[in-house]
Amino acid sequence: MDKLLDVENVSISFIQYTQGLNQRNLKVITDLTLDINEGEILAVLGSSGSGKSLLAHAIMGILPENAQLNGKIKFKGKDLSQEDKEEIRGSKIAFIPQSVNFLDPLMKISDQAIGHTESEEEKKSKKIKQREIFEHYNLGPEVDEMYPFQLSGGMARRVLVSTALLSDPELVIADEPTPGLDEKTVKETLNHFRHMKEDNIGVLLITHDIHAALDVADRIGIFYSGYVIEIAETKDFTGDGENLLHPYTKALYKALPANGFELKKGHQPLHGEIPEGCPYYNRCEMAFDRCEKERPQLISLGNKKVRCFKYEEGA
Ligand SMILES: Nc1ncnc2c1ncn2[C@@H]1O[C@H](COP(=O)(O)OP(=O)(O)OP(=O)(O)O)[C@@H](O)[C@H]1O
Ligand code: NI
Image 1 (tube, rainbow, N blue to C red):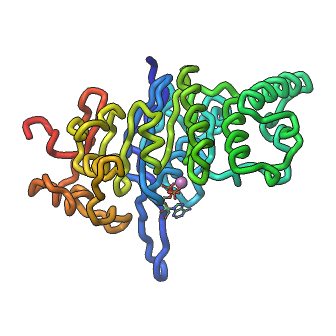
Image 2 (cartoon, rainbow, N blue to C red; image 1 turned 45 degrees about the vertical axis):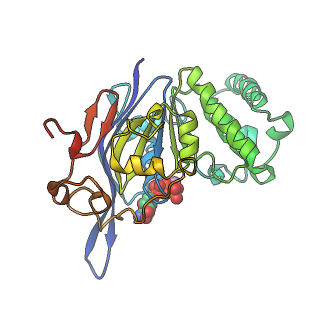
Image 3 (cartoon, rainbow, N blue to C red; image 1 turned 135 degrees about the vertical axis):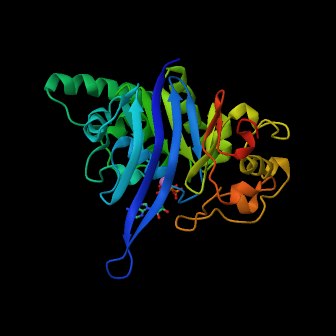
């Protein structure tokens, strides 16, 4: 299994102007590290506003102008510059955006799926392939001639998925592909990711839907206050959750309706109010004294990673 994507110590922040000339650095993502292998589905699970879309946009090289990106993003071991990202986006790395607004409202579906071509010949062969993939996703020939506003929600989702696959990508980044879909379409969408995995494509599935993540992912990265506090194996979300590492992940797991518990009260500290120490300190039942002032690093334990002093060597 080869490594496809490495995100190393990535931070994303925005410069905010407050009163007068005062600036504030709004950190949205801090020291984020994760990796994806060929044929692996990694879910990144985080609440709304936790920076999931920004992570996807950082990898694709489409962050807004006022965002500042630090850290490394590597594809197959190569550190990606902005130019590299522009070159491989839409080809080796494909993006399934969160919003169907990414579709051009004034362009016919088939034309935008095919995109720019260099010659008539290329256009013809791409058209054949587009039809094949669309057919596979249950999008008949009539869809080719439609404009985005004529698509139902489920159809639009399928257009986005098949368009992403048209370039034979090695890595697919999907930003919230399931919200607003009915149960059947959710199942269908998750099946698409299974098929990609079978084709040895790596998938980064960004979601706040823990059920979707548990359903298809091999590993799950848990966002908390802009940090990835754990990268767990999906199979560890069983029993009492005893194989899960971080106290927050354990609480999250116990809060699943099937486990009959409720998530303890308390919100994730937001950007600007993130404490010096562990962001989970105030809610943690296992906190040590040092957790208040010191921030734990991400520790690797085999295939898993966790940001908690409990797992430090000798702790
Ligand atoms: N252009 C911007 N300027 C300033 N702050 C921004 C900008 N874009 C995003 N943010 C901030 O970054 C945070 C993360 O945004 P992002 O869209 O990545 O969240 P998300 O996890 O994808 O949320 P959702 O689940 O709602 O899609 C937001 O809380 C927002 O305040
Ligand atoms: Ni988002």
